[in-house]
Length: 177
Image (tube, rainbow, N blue to C red; front, top):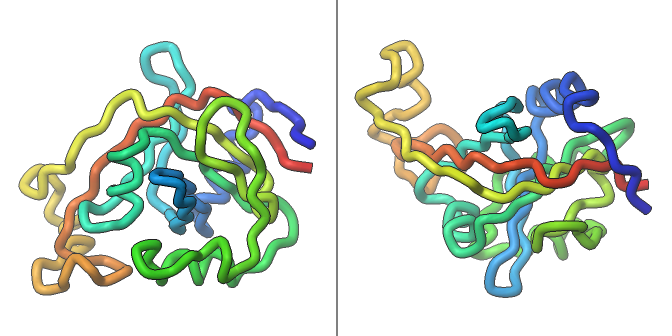
């Protein structure tokens, strides 16, 4: 069961969730993948509620988003298994079926193709309406530490690859109950 919400009434929970990590879930070519993110923002643009996520160029999630420009954001609410975020933040969907490995429960979406994750019940369904690659030269010097050019792009943490900002219009928001 889903209890729909006004996303702006839950902005605090969403932003606080980002601090500790949330899942970004995609679906393309019949494969569902979830990646832990902690870089994102919630706001309004073009008179629409927007969730902007930042995905590094070399990530499998980027490949998924470029094939299917829809995603869900799955936010912890209440007690949850922290191993979910740890595992999804260190394993690649190219080689690991994270959903199967963790035994996660997929929840059918209302308006997009990517499912929700029952174990992280605060769910935003998003459709990409704009994307923009970061320009390393335009990033303030104190933030360039997040893009060390001597760390290969396949490393799961901070590495040389810049991110692509995906602006997702939030088309539905709800708690999975």
